[in-house]
Image (cartoon, rainbow, N blue to C red; front, side, top):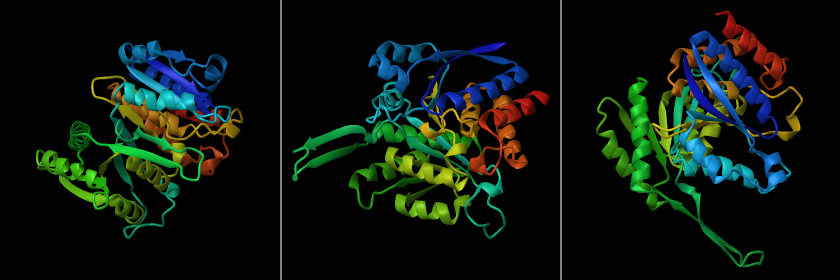
Length: 354
């Protein structure tokens, strides 16, 4: 039996609840398909930070870099830490320090009823595209600073960083993913009509795209793309863009298919352990009330299992969530009457009975 060491950071708020749901579902899938996750629970969270002053130590980062096959994170954020220092060090810190340059956000409509848009010209919506966000550059590198703080003349500077290496590798990853998954169009988005630095993206798109003659390449300014995603989401297959735009567009994509409660994500670097996290926040007011939607965490676990090369198990997890939505076995945010634990049990029973 194949065994995989997996580090788990349950996090804050509803994080521990949705992580428990994801692990229970994954355990049912692993029993059915013949593999095992050796789960190591790490303590890093707001509670840990407040008790010790420690966010995530260097030794833990080295451990995650060298000793595990995957990292699963629940959700981070706590009003007791208003600056979110622990969340920044854990999430952004691991993305940068482990060089997880691919942020993958699938946008897949599990059921027509979840889409807030009216039906398209051909009937109910069938949305299925992936957003690839460059994860280690752009505005999020923190370059810049402030002058004359707390005065009427305060100045804040934030600089974007785009390297040829960084842009090329995320665009190439998007084309490789499209090729492997039978997609025929890659859309790159920037704001090069207003930001000259973004023209690098267009040059690299043309060069890399020419190596994939079977895949159409196209460019959209980010404001136009946001409009088109609402008007005609079905036409998009693969979107690749910079850090900030990817952050914004992927939340728009999530809302097109039902919201953050069903939106998974993965942070990847080929050949290294990926970091997998549901997109939603920690929602402290919902913690401990058995109302948190576990689907995003379960679908995130499916992404993790797929990266670990257990494709049938990943598909079974996704099919179970799709079946639960169709059956109305959901939490109240999706119109159902079940709690987190009851939805999880429904998923586990379906996986175990097949």
